[in-house]
Picture 1 (spheres, rainbow, N blue to C red):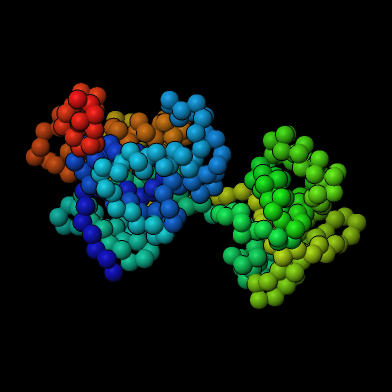
Picture 2 (picture 1 turned 180 degrees about the vertical axis):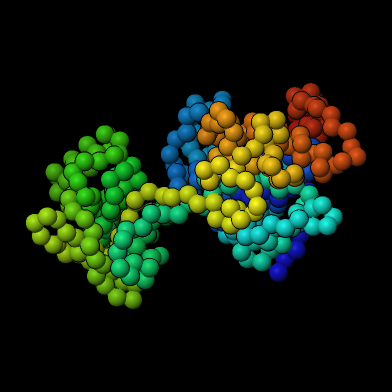
Length: 344
């Protein structure tokens, strides 16, 4: 078990959690971040690393991974500590007024301030209702594509009718030995351009489209040999060694729901002055919080992080006076950022 003490614990290392490190760092607060994923960036980096984002100020277009990389570059001067692959499991108030957070890996972090920036909570894939699917998961059944090269030469069945299913059918088609797209109806929720490209590949014999429901997996010891599908007319056994199921994601708060905070439809209510919850010294920023007029935008989370940091300072440094400064004109802030010589 590892024990740490810091100024602020941030639950969630997505874009909003990362920018919070910057705002807190400007005010001399050190941060530890806890995230269930194995890398920073949250949903942007995990689910849509190559998809473009169009509403980040000053960036007409930027990918989720590029945004993550630039945020990491921005917070480098503040040297945050990351605890990846860990879920924030329990939160306890100590006699000294600090909070004690314990993770699923037994890591213990103590700090006067906790910031919940966990996006929509933990992302859990919606799984097909197929008997024994757990045996195949991570071996021949997957709910996301981390590395395309992993699927080179595979006979792949892709199940789903949305953007993820169509995007990966198109992207993996050049790599795979075969691609079969299975959807319960011949109508797709994906972008029309993607649907048109898929139908062109089907017409050219480079991909198969099968309108049916999944019924059973065929194989043993996690090794898939085929999937039994069913239509109104008949059952079909489609040979494949890989099943990619894209039925969307559900978002769950997970253990955060047990932190004793009041919830509003599975979101955390906050005030709009400090973005503090109804429990002092616990803040919530980004998509996981709620207040009247809330917009679930990354730029809204950035604004919330800035105001949160002002109040967090008062808890971390109760005897210091908070002085508002601009990075453009404050030599002290520029020195923290390592740009004082450039500014001169």
